[in-house]
Length: 125
Image (cartoon, rainbow, N blue to C red; front, side, top):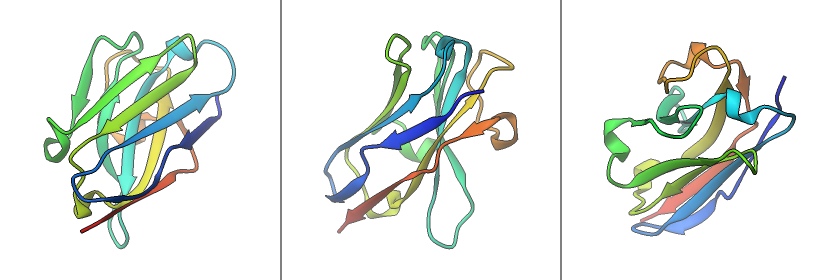
């Protein structure tokens, strides 16, 4: 099993930047593909970005392409989400998730077995 802890959220003005981190406990972090999801008030949780086990493959939802970047450091058991050019509609609780079944990134929530508690991001206009 793995436990995930997110950090780095906060309040930022529109067009600003934040970097979220998600640190995993335990060994074999490199065996997990990772994902970032978000849930805005009154909305369903949605996929933001995913990364393969090695970090060589990534995927993004259309609304964040060119603004967000997912990366990982397997030596530090950490996955990152660099968020630039933030918009008020990016306001949400951001969650990281892990899955060990396959290597390629996935946007499907039901394929992730482990979830963090989330970190709040608020973007003011």
